Image 1: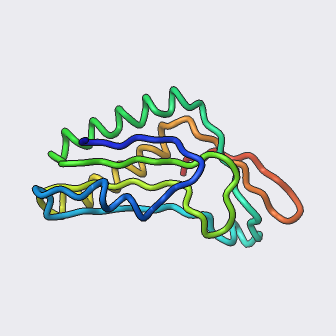
Image 2 (image 1 turned 90 degrees about the vertical axis):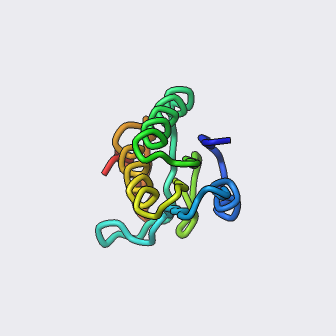
Image 3 (image 1 turned 45 degrees about the vertical axis):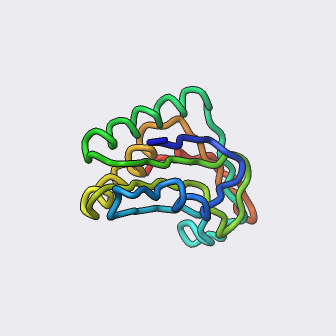
Length: 138
């Protein structure tokens, strides 16, 4: 399978390497985004993610297809979590494998940046004393 595209409740980062591994790939790059402890000097308790799942998956497919073609990748993984996630929990993972490292590094950056810019995923930041809905886009 050339690509894995999923919206899930729990991200298993351990299986991503196996999903990207390929005899033709000399390079495998993976980016994992996790919940950090502070945002703007405020302590984060959790993040909650919601999505329009069918539209999100469709958009993620388009992004993966663009990356596969542009960088001649062997495989792509794009996975985003929904629901509430605590500090240090992974919320997104993207990865690419290719014959050479340059292609997978560039593709991995493209995958996460474009996902955050175009995929309909919304984030609620939960702090000790307040909750704020924010765009999941940078």
